Length: 498
Ligand code: NAD
Image 1 (cartoon, protein in one colour):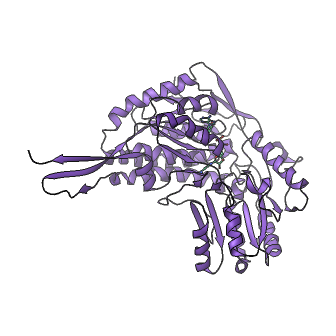
Image 2: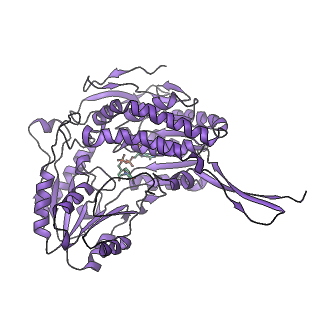
């Protein structure tokens, strides 16, 4: 079957080039013909149907990847890198199309989120393509009669599973290093945001041999679980919630598979009293990712502000957070789009209801999502800030994955470090102070994989990105990902006596 472009039913101005699975270089329906609808979160209409992949689809994709692996692993790394660079060029030339599709399916605003994400996805292929020459080994000096060296080898078939919140950049972050290292890939797209990932697959398929990259679609518990438990898969790279990630880890224990997990977070942002200024407010607002409706694993959603500036800082933050223009994700005027789905919307709403009902908690900004006017037609939520003295209640402990910030006052540095570390998560953290020595000292004390001082920005290539504690295992976005997550090191020792 050929993939043919269709207009979205939810907004005919958005053209979807492909809504089928890519298996062995061919575009396919699901083996049993079943489909699921994908909804547009800005207007709750169905965009299109996608295949509801099953065990049979996961199996065909893994077998295709295994067959392709035998040849792909023998392509010289520099040639693989060159192909990735050509994919990067092709993705860049289709970045605007990609950005519109992702804005439409995720509800992420095109100017602030989807366009930068599309460009980042292309740049990810360029970055990892350029690292191909780093797949090198070393020699061990055992004397003139022995040659002892190491070599980097691919792992085999990589199963990659991605969420919906930044679907194409996370997909690129798995596909590009996995292919560069000589693996082949079966990627399971998120059910709520498959179309951008399928466009990336379409572009890749113009350059790669059949079976090197396969993409399946459908429900996590069905084709996702089938992929995770498939006996011919050699590595799993999963990004998603901590609860599903734990299940993935458990399902692979029997086969002792290498697993990388990028999981949830509830990251602390600590503001010292010398930071009661606009630059820190901007950094905190950035760290909270309000422009992605805070559907970000690194959102600084536990804000600790020194008690002496607590009221004035929250006042400034509320003014700043109110300035974000919420609206149509496809409009250039919009800063902040919609939550992804009805399920996510209900979850965020129930957290806000709980916050509103809590005694001793004060609502500083926002509240329940709008129920009237144009924003009530989609899953729009508003930046919401609760002032609380407790770090222990549910809203301060659990990942809400929506624009709900809990602000807690503190007095003593050791106390705030202790509170910041009182979490089973350890993904990110933020410190704001003009005293950089103090800020660095605190950064070193926070039990998280990535701390930013005096800023709240996104990831940069080269920075090993990944969580501590129940936020994950492994590092992405960096040479460490290419070498440690997607290749294995073999030692070879040769006697030269003969
Ligand atoms: P999720 O765990 O529900 O789903 C993630 C992916 O796993 C989806 O493709 C889903 O279909 C699949 N899946 C679900 N059940 C499965 C199963 N039993 N077996 C195999 N696959 C299964 O997460 P989500 O709601 O899509 O995404 C939000 C979560 O992702 C948040 O917790 C967020 O923090 C996390 N996240 C983490 C990072 C990071 O880099 N650490 C980045 C983005 C998102």
